[in-house]
Amino acid sequence: ILGSGSGALIQGLIRRHGLPFFRRDDDASWYRCHPMFAAFMQHDYAKANDYFSEVLKLQKDNISALINRANALSELGRTDEAMRDYDRAVQLQPGNGQIFYNRGILWQKKNDAQRSQSDFDQAKHLGYVR
Image 1 (spheres, one colour):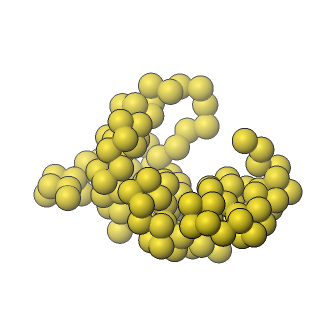
Image 2 (cartoon, rainbow, N blue to C red):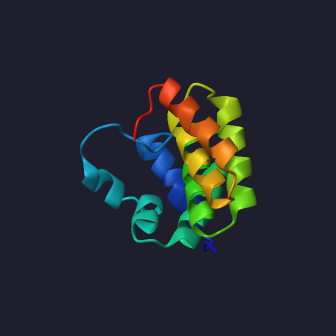
């Protein structure tokens, strides 16, 4: 669980970089220097989950935080919680193919081939190809 300074850390990141904490460029070092992404990249999914949960306390509909927390929860085997985050993200951005793709992977983990394929098809329809 995050210490008392974590809220200040997240708020500092918001002030410096704004939400959603993503830059769509080729600067991979930007991701490594932020604790929440570093935790995920180092496979510390519990810590990543804690960081993204802190972001969601400040902005409950932050798509990036929802997707990344769902990814972390999925890696932790907490599939029902991950599914709730993906479902919320789909409600907020139904045109985001990445969400459908990620949720399709989660449906595979839950051994639901029909729903998995449906989400993969929707992701492809929306132009998300992996």
